[in-house]
Image (cartoon, rainbow, N blue to C red; front, side, top):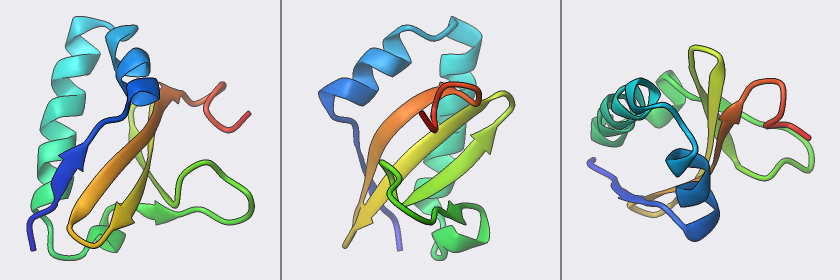
Length: 85
């Protein structure tokens, strides 16, 4: 199953603040995740009152996202020290 990647305004601001090298890595990683049949094989399900449902690691950065049917909704993209606050 291929997912459609949706990036709301808050996540777009996070992405715009990143380095161009990090943005390129992020694009490749998101395309890889969106092409998977089972996102749980690469993503970790978050517990508690977190902003997103899942997270993937990308070096020192974390991508928090939700899954809604065939949509992969990016919630936040931030450095690991800031993303869970």
